[in-house]
Image (cartoon, rainbow, N blue to C red):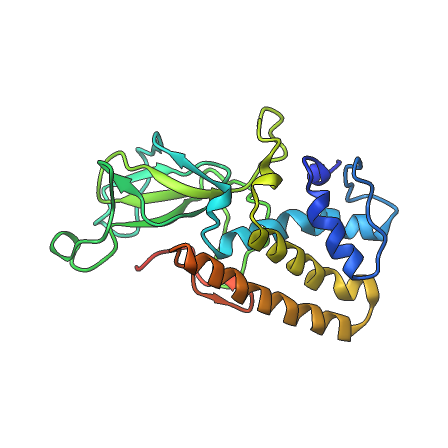
Length: 247
């Protein structure tokens, strides 16, 4: 089954990483296929969606964000903590929340008076409704299941980093990759280069160099986002440390 990863200018992310590894670029009109006879094309097809989702998870990239004011309530959801009275399905293209959920036009900050010092919200998973988020599970966490926002208030709304869903033919977002700022684009390209270095060149030195470039790039991205007033999530080994806030 073809992977539609090279649509809508994703090649502008893939090809610079391949060039830096001394590899020929892929055709801009091609659609990647995991069954391709071209080993490089097969490698890209198997990994690119997960790489992009992984990088999007690391920081609050507001250049690819949406606001949802009408989340769908879940009536049969049982939160792990009884302080959360409400649960809402997060959109299928959800990656991570930017800032805090809002209620009545104000951020939903935690209140010690109301919930004894715990956060007023958390993100859980609704395992009865699995969703493929296009990424491998980082250590210590799982992306299996419908992502759920648990809150202490009714009808919150969220601003969130989103991932273009290629399997949805009705998705009208042809400019998704043009929305990416330079920090996000560079971070994705650095991660691609780091992940593809050894499979393509068979040189551990190339892999080590690419890894160092990836780590330095993350620092630059963190600095750029901090200057914009965003607070990045804690990361380790290039991966997000948690999908749950403050519990």
